[in-house]
Image 1 (cartoon, rainbow, N blue to C red):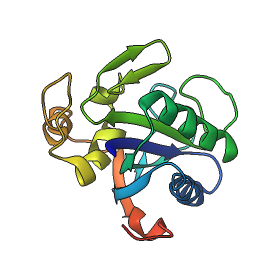
Image 2 (image 1 turned 90 degrees about the horizontal axis):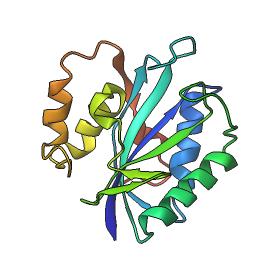
Image 3 (image 1 turned 90 degrees about the vertical axis):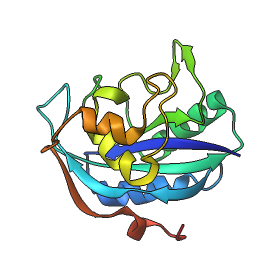
Length: 169
């Protein structure tokens, strides 16, 4: 089993319920070992949209990286994600942030996630569950990378994501 750091976010509809359904939907292919708190976050890049609920989860999987990508994209579609503009509103977004210590650079699969170093909405929740995980490219811990971003006033803790789990970790 390989440890994987996932980032999950939603800003359409019942965001908490969507995150809950996404966590439940991981069960066929990944075992959740930790979930962060829930964070309400301002949209980044395209700011004319509703705020997001974001979390990070550490899971363990036997799937290879590409198989995992296909599985999370299928889960997104099953939860109602529709094609939309880049960085626009979405029912659910599930990103593979890190896959063990793998480095993959392909057109449609980049691990670690290529924009994680600039995203407080990922790094702040990731500190909750993977603070000492070392980013394989940057060579720094998640905690250190989050600290590099400084204060993150647009990332506000709004609850306990563990309460959303059907099966406690």
